[in-house]
Length: 201
Image 1 (tube, rainbow, N blue to C red):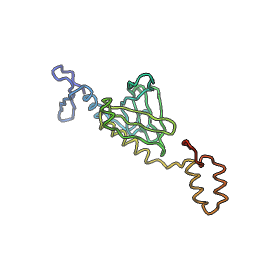
Image 2: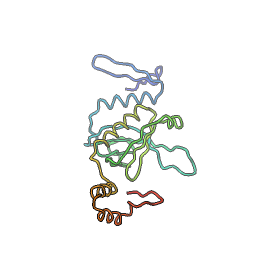
Image 3: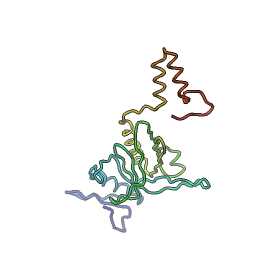
Image 4: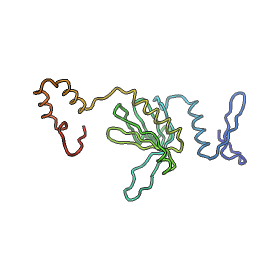
Protein backbone atom coordinates (compact mmCIF):
# COMPACT_ATOMS: atom_id res chain seq x y z
CA UNK A 1 0.00 0.00 0.00
CA UNK A 2 1.16 3.56 -0.71
CA UNK A 3 1.74 5.49 2.48
CA UNK A 4 -0.09 8.77 3.12
CA UNK A 5 2.50 9.95 5.62
CA UNK A 6 3.62 13.46 4.49
CA UNK A 7 6.99 13.02 6.27
CA UNK A 8 7.80 10.00 4.08
CA UNK A 9 6.93 10.83 0.46
CA UNK A 10 7.28 8.03 -2.10
CA UNK A 11 7.06 5.37 0.59
CA UNK A 12 4.94 2.24 0.71
CA UNK A 13 4.38 -0.67 3.08
CA UNK A 14 4.18 -4.42 2.56
CA UNK A 15 1.85 -5.97 5.13
CA UNK A 16 2.59 -9.61 5.98
CA UNK A 17 0.95 -11.89 8.53
CA UNK A 18 3.79 -11.46 11.06
CA UNK A 19 5.27 -8.05 10.23
CA UNK A 20 5.02 -4.81 8.24
CA UNK A 21 7.86 -3.80 5.90
CA UNK A 22 8.34 -0.06 5.22
CA UNK A 23 9.93 0.79 1.84
CA UNK A 24 11.14 4.12 0.42
CA UNK A 25 11.60 5.16 -3.22
CA UNK A 26 13.37 8.10 -4.79
CA UNK A 27 10.48 9.08 -7.07
CA UNK A 28 6.69 8.56 -7.25
CA UNK A 29 7.19 6.62 -10.52
CA UNK A 30 9.58 4.18 -8.84
CA UNK A 31 7.16 3.72 -5.93
CA UNK A 32 4.25 2.94 -8.28
CA UNK A 33 6.48 0.62 -10.32
CA UNK A 34 7.31 -1.45 -7.22
CA UNK A 35 3.68 -1.49 -6.10
CA UNK A 36 2.54 -2.72 -9.52
CA UNK A 37 5.20 -5.47 -9.51
CA UNK A 38 4.14 -6.60 -6.04
CA UNK A 39 0.48 -6.64 -7.05
CA UNK A 40 1.28 -8.72 -10.14
CA UNK A 41 2.98 -11.41 -8.10
CA UNK A 42 -0.09 -12.00 -5.95
CA UNK A 43 -2.59 -11.82 -8.80
CA UNK A 44 -3.73 -14.88 -10.66
CA UNK A 45 -2.98 -15.46 -14.35
CA UNK A 46 -6.47 -14.79 -15.64
CA UNK A 47 -7.94 -11.48 -16.77
CA UNK A 48 -11.59 -11.46 -17.87
CA UNK A 49 -11.50 -15.23 -18.27
CA UNK A 50 -8.43 -15.07 -20.51
CA UNK A 51 -5.03 -16.37 -19.49
CA UNK A 52 -2.15 -13.93 -19.73
CA UNK A 53 1.62 -14.14 -19.52
CA UNK A 54 2.42 -10.49 -18.77
CA UNK A 55 0.17 -7.50 -18.19
CA UNK A 56 0.80 -3.93 -17.15
CA UNK A 57 1.02 -0.27 -18.10
CA UNK A 58 3.26 0.77 -21.00
CA UNK A 59 3.44 3.90 -23.13
CA UNK A 60 2.51 3.35 -26.78
CA UNK A 61 3.88 5.57 -29.53
CA UNK A 62 1.08 7.25 -31.41
CA UNK A 63 1.19 8.12 -35.11
CA UNK A 64 3.61 11.00 -35.40
CA UNK A 65 3.02 14.13 -37.42
CA UNK A 66 5.66 14.55 -40.14
CA UNK A 67 5.95 18.28 -39.32
CA UNK A 68 7.15 17.62 -35.77
CA UNK A 69 9.63 15.04 -34.60
CA UNK A 70 8.43 15.13 -30.97
CA UNK A 71 7.55 11.81 -29.40
CA UNK A 72 3.81 11.33 -28.75
CA UNK A 73 3.06 8.67 -26.15
CA UNK A 74 -0.19 7.43 -24.64
CA UNK A 75 -0.36 5.29 -21.52
CA UNK A 76 -1.98 1.94 -22.36
CA UNK A 77 -2.89 -1.21 -20.41
CA UNK A 78 -1.15 -4.05 -22.26
CA UNK A 79 -1.85 -7.76 -22.01
CA UNK A 80 0.27 -10.54 -23.55
CA UNK A 81 -1.21 -14.01 -23.96
CA UNK A 82 -0.14 -17.10 -25.92
CA UNK A 83 -1.68 -15.80 -29.14
CA UNK A 84 -1.52 -12.02 -29.19
CA UNK A 85 -0.49 -8.74 -27.64
CA UNK A 86 -3.57 -6.63 -26.85
CA UNK A 87 -3.77 -3.07 -25.56
CA UNK A 88 -6.56 -1.15 -23.88
CA UNK A 89 -7.25 2.41 -22.77
CA UNK A 90 -7.45 1.32 -19.12
CA UNK A 91 -7.21 -1.72 -16.85
CA UNK A 92 -10.95 -1.61 -16.12
CA UNK A 93 -12.85 -4.78 -17.05
CA UNK A 94 -15.25 -2.72 -19.19
CA UNK A 95 -12.43 -1.05 -21.16
CA UNK A 96 -12.63 -1.82 -24.88
CA UNK A 97 -9.68 -3.25 -26.76
CA UNK A 98 -7.87 -0.59 -28.83
CA UNK A 99 -5.60 -2.92 -30.76
CA UNK A 100 -4.29 -6.44 -31.23
CA UNK A 101 -1.15 -7.87 -32.77
CA UNK A 102 -1.54 -11.59 -33.48
CA UNK A 103 1.79 -13.30 -32.81
CA UNK A 104 3.21 -15.99 -35.08
CA UNK A 105 6.64 -17.29 -36.09
CA UNK A 106 7.09 -14.46 -38.62
CA UNK A 107 6.86 -11.77 -35.91
CA UNK A 108 9.93 -10.28 -34.26
CA UNK A 109 10.72 -8.05 -31.31
CA UNK A 110 13.62 -5.58 -31.01
CA UNK A 111 15.48 -5.26 -27.72
CA UNK A 112 15.68 -1.94 -25.85
CA UNK A 113 18.88 0.05 -26.39
CA UNK A 114 20.85 2.83 -24.72
CA UNK A 115 20.54 5.22 -27.68
CA UNK A 116 16.76 5.46 -27.36
CA UNK A 117 17.01 5.93 -23.59
CA UNK A 118 19.57 8.74 -23.96
CA UNK A 119 17.41 10.51 -26.56
CA UNK A 120 13.98 10.14 -24.92
CA UNK A 121 14.42 9.10 -21.28
CA UNK A 122 12.46 5.93 -22.06
CA UNK A 123 13.48 2.36 -22.85
CA UNK A 124 11.62 1.31 -25.96
CA UNK A 125 11.02 -1.91 -27.85
CA UNK A 126 9.20 -2.69 -31.09
CA UNK A 127 7.06 -5.69 -31.95
CA UNK A 128 6.95 -6.29 -35.72
CA UNK A 129 4.04 -8.16 -37.27
CA UNK A 130 3.50 -9.00 -40.94
CA UNK A 131 1.47 -5.85 -41.62
CA UNK A 132 2.25 -3.40 -38.81
CA UNK A 133 4.48 -2.74 -35.81
CA UNK A 134 3.84 -1.52 -32.28
CA UNK A 135 6.30 0.68 -30.38
CA UNK A 136 6.13 0.60 -26.59
CA UNK A 137 8.05 2.65 -24.02
CA UNK A 138 8.79 2.33 -20.31
CA UNK A 139 11.04 4.22 -17.89
CA UNK A 140 12.51 0.98 -16.54
CA UNK A 141 14.99 -1.27 -18.35
CA UNK A 142 13.99 -4.37 -16.35
CA UNK A 143 10.35 -3.82 -17.36
CA UNK A 144 11.30 -3.51 -21.05
CA UNK A 145 13.46 -6.66 -20.81
CA UNK A 146 10.65 -8.57 -19.08
CA UNK A 147 8.22 -7.71 -21.90
CA UNK A 148 10.63 -8.41 -24.78
CA UNK A 149 11.69 -11.72 -23.26
CA UNK A 150 8.08 -12.85 -22.76
CA UNK A 151 7.05 -11.76 -26.28
CA UNK A 152 10.07 -13.48 -27.86
CA UNK A 153 9.22 -16.65 -25.92
CA UNK A 154 5.67 -16.64 -27.34
CA UNK A 155 7.04 -16.13 -30.89
CA UNK A 156 9.64 -18.90 -30.43
CA UNK A 157 6.94 -21.37 -29.36
CA UNK A 158 4.81 -20.80 -32.47
CA UNK A 159 4.75 -23.35 -35.30
CA UNK A 160 7.04 -22.07 -38.09
CA UNK A 161 5.13 -20.54 -41.00
CA UNK A 162 6.53 -21.01 -44.48
CA UNK A 163 6.02 -17.98 -46.73
CA UNK A 164 4.97 -18.44 -50.37
CA UNK A 165 8.47 -17.44 -51.50
CA UNK A 166 10.06 -20.04 -49.20
CA UNK A 167 7.67 -22.67 -50.63
CA UNK A 168 8.74 -21.77 -54.18
CA UNK A 169 12.44 -21.96 -53.29
CA UNK A 170 11.85 -25.36 -51.65
CA UNK A 171 10.02 -26.58 -54.81
CA UNK A 172 12.96 -25.49 -56.98
CA UNK A 173 15.47 -27.28 -54.73
CA UNK A 174 13.39 -30.47 -54.71
CA UNK A 175 13.07 -30.41 -58.53
CA UNK A 176 16.58 -29.19 -59.31
CA UNK A 177 17.26 -32.21 -61.55
CA UNK A 178 14.20 -31.52 -63.72
CA UNK A 179 14.87 -28.33 -65.69
CA UNK A 180 11.37 -28.27 -67.23
CA UNK A 181 9.68 -28.01 -63.81
CA UNK A 182 12.22 -25.41 -62.63
CA UNK A 183 11.75 -23.29 -65.79
CA UNK A 184 7.96 -23.52 -65.42
CA UNK A 185 8.19 -22.46 -61.76
CA UNK A 186 10.23 -19.39 -62.73
CA UNK A 187 7.85 -18.55 -65.59
CA UNK A 188 4.74 -18.72 -63.38
CA UNK A 189 6.24 -16.82 -60.45
CA UNK A 190 7.72 -13.42 -61.34
CA UNK A 191 8.70 -12.93 -57.69
CA UNK A 192 11.64 -15.27 -58.34
CA UNK A 193 13.07 -13.12 -61.13
CA UNK A 194 15.70 -10.44 -60.65
CA UNK A 195 14.38 -6.88 -60.39
CA UNK A 196 15.94 -3.50 -59.67
CA UNK A 197 13.70 -3.10 -56.61
CA UNK A 198 12.86 -5.47 -53.74
CA UNK A 199 9.83 -7.73 -54.08
CA UNK A 200 7.81 -8.81 -51.04
CA UNK A 201 6.12 -12.18 -50.72
